[in-house]
Image (cartoon, rainbow, N blue to C red; front, side, top):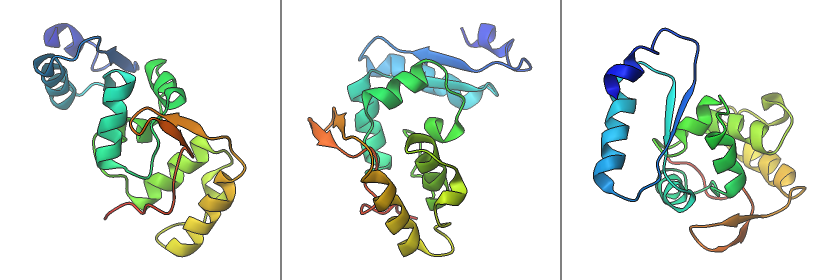
Length: 152
């Protein structure tokens, strides 16, 4: 499979691998392919599995069905790929805010300039949104909780 996917490396494609198993060996295999092939690719677990991974790296993000469906359908937004791979930098959280809440990045104070103002901008914007179901905590929450700051 890795050889077949390698042929796509130089093509302008985004590949989404949607796993339909909870076998750790299978997930590890596909994650290894994702790490070792220079292919624009996202490997997705089921909703609950992804929510658990996102919560581990980015506890301020509620990984909901809406985000999962966007990723499953191939949304080419790099910050989505990072959600379950690493802790987002504040500037990446700003990008995520503009995508999931709306507006553009300039609607939010740059967190490296004034983090408290960024948190306030996020809080204000989030209050205008509907809550989403958090499959990890099994409750309704805001899609982003800016009061849970990302670790640097």
